[in-house]
Amino acid sequence: MIRKLLIANRGEIAVRIARACAEAGVRSVAVYTDADRHALHVRKADEAYHLGPDSAGGYLNVQRIVNLARETGCDAVHPGYGFLAESPALAERCAAAGLRFIGPPPGVIRTAGDKLAARRAVAAAGVPVVPGGERALADAGEAAALAAEVGYPVMLKATAGGGGRGIRLCRDETELRRAWDRVVSEAGKAFGRSEIYLERCIARPRHIEVQILADAHGRVLHLWERDCSIQRRHQKLIEIAPSPQLDAERRARVCALAVRAAEALGYVNAGTIEFLLDQKGEFHFLEVNPRLQVEHPVTEEITGIDIVQAQLAVAAGERLPWRQEEIVPRGMAMELRINAEDPRNDFLPSFGRITRYFAPGGPGVRTDGAIYTGYVIPPYYDSLCVKLVVWAPDWEALLRRALRALDDIGVHGVRTTIPFHREVLRHPAFRSGRFDTGFVEAHPELTRYSVRRPPRELAAAVAAALAARMGL
Image (tube, rainbow, N blue to C red; front, top):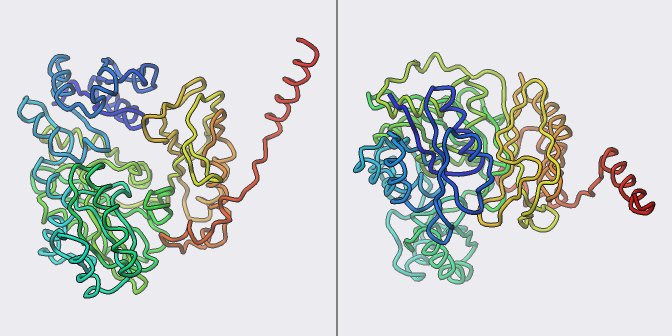
């Protein structure tokens, strides 16, 4: 059994893991930097320890994290999601220190992190991949020759890429040669590796991913699919489970392909197999995310399975207790990422103090977040404030509940994506349940909304102005 676990992350995912630990009877240990001294994950864990300033490596200081885990009597480390979760270094250091790593083995992480190696492994198992090269390219000239063979448009991608970084669309050779140096530079800075490969660009795809759970005893299960097509610059904004765009036949097909891919990789623990669905209705393997995904709550809502607790059980050597036929999706769920960004100003980050925060409630509403009234969002990390998750029996009810929850939630003091999400949910093309990854770019009017202050906020502003004028 795992008795005590160090959470090697911050923000809402650290809070989420601490909650799972509390329910599983596992003591949780948080870590924090100077900027996060008053963060919510520090308060929610059973213990919390200072990592030092961010200049000393902060949350990416692998050796400091492993040393802290040993010093505080932990027997496991959970990386959440992000850089450490996708790097084999932490998994290897944990194993060397006698700690359980909550995630797949280092070899699986290494293969999944190399996009070309992952492509080769799943293709050998009969999983269709996006047409393109099978090795890293030497220079722009080699890329141009391959692009001429594959056919434009193409995507230049970092072999170690992720999170929408290290990727560029090239419509012709001129764009490709212009983008080459930029992609190489971005890959080197973001991932420490500058290898680049090339794939054909699938026009107007739907982004479909499948949640996987696998134990060390050979059982690989899928927890059905999620639709992540609503995104901007390859960054997901809204996730839906199951996809409103799949019929039963295609749903069964993509889930079977995901299980086959996971088996080919020797996968253990939780992970996600991502696909692109083209306009002809064919699936193409995109990548493996060897970790817990930001959007895992929508899968939990439709299956009733706590994925984080399942991760802990698998890491402790237990067998998964379910059979595939027992995992039946119930209703639909949607996750809206409430980011501290200004959609009307090209989604620029909006860091600062949360002057007031009102959490939504009611049936079928869940919030995974790390903010509170008075919390200061630091400028050093990502801009995610809250994941607003709603569940309903069907698509129409889901849309109504999501809009109601967006009207309930209040995040004041910084600009957020809440008004943008309202515009998306009201748009006829989205409500039809038929959309692709180009939806946001195809509808620039979504960011041209006018901000309407709620009556209670207007009343408070008027009262404050009168009080100031009267010298109160």
